[in-house]
Amino acid sequence: MRMRQDSASFEEAFYEEMQLERNRRERLRRDAAARSRRRQTERIHKAGTFRFILLVLAIVGTAVGVTLAMFQVLYIALG
Figure (cartoon, rainbow, N blue to C red):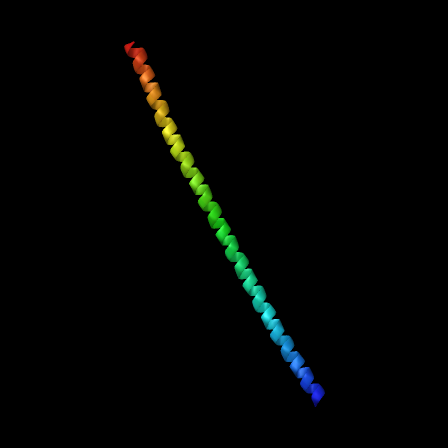
């Protein structure tokens, strides 16, 4: 009788441990997926910021270039 009780409690403890391990693996998987999504979002944001700065610099550069060219043409035309 005692042997059967020990076996049953051992089996019950084994199943509980299995369930805990399964829950732990699932939590780790969810945490890893959340970290991956967070890193991807940060990369997208960083790339968007870089492209925006590049766009602003291109617009300012174009405006400066057109202004300089316009004044040079005016200087040549009126000079």
